[in-house]
Length: 385
Image 1 (cartoon, one colour):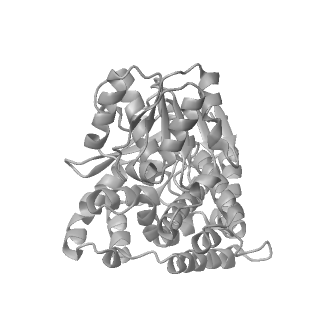
Image 2: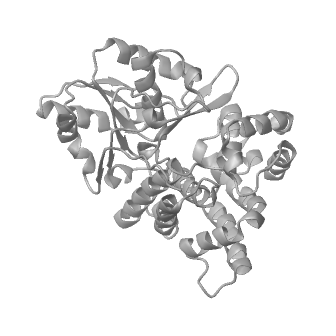
Image 3: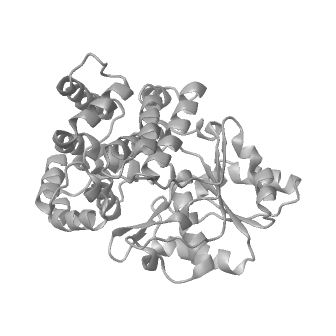
């Protein structure tokens, strides 16, 4: 049995990779890019620097900076209108996962029309949108190398998963220098998001030898460096390892799919506006404990890759060490419970059945080593509180 692997056509990885944008545009034959980003990238001066660099190479680039931390149908519509009527031939997506996810949706809708719900999973979107050059500024989502985007329908609080080759950026410029200014909270949330991608890709029922190799490499890079990057943001070696680990984790899950953590995480984010990486972090220990009996050897491999177990440890010992490490990581990185985050208890419990159905409808729980039913998902949500 063979596996189809989808990657960006161009990947530039390493220090100052983002400065290659003009060369990449020229190689693609693109002359009129639209920069899609967020207000923070403007405030930090990244957008001005990018526009100046492009101007030095005779490229004029307009900016759409109204993306939201959790993209919604409404938030992307202004970007769709701008992209559709601005005579642009490409998109530069600058920022964390949210601007990149927004750019993916905008690129498809600007070229093909309709509403993003029309492109929701299980539809596979293989038609090409405007070509995207993705420049991530966080080490977390891996969106620069994935064929997925997540857009929230604000009228139903549903996070819609959209998937297909059409959402894969044409180019990804992986520059860890852009993460050196990230605050500790963002470093932690995006870092655990990347770790979750790698773990879920490795235990996913859709895993394959290629995705396995990327996932384990990502865990080895993230494991020793997440705490270092959290406590010492100026540590360039830690930041570089986290950035590469995040990208490899993105490659892994894009070609193997995520599983139960992500399926359960999306409804928490949609209903209670918890940042995606943080809701993943909340869930990772509990979901791992639930799933471990169905894939003990796989989780033992993760324990060895992250560095808390060695080859002499039995599978059971390795698994216990892995669960202890996930709990310790959450403690050190100050990951709150839903209650500590400020979610109202009554509403959280009332919405559990709805969240469980939304999780199952996403398809991600079906990739889990142990596939839950709605009651089991509700039990994990209850435990999480």
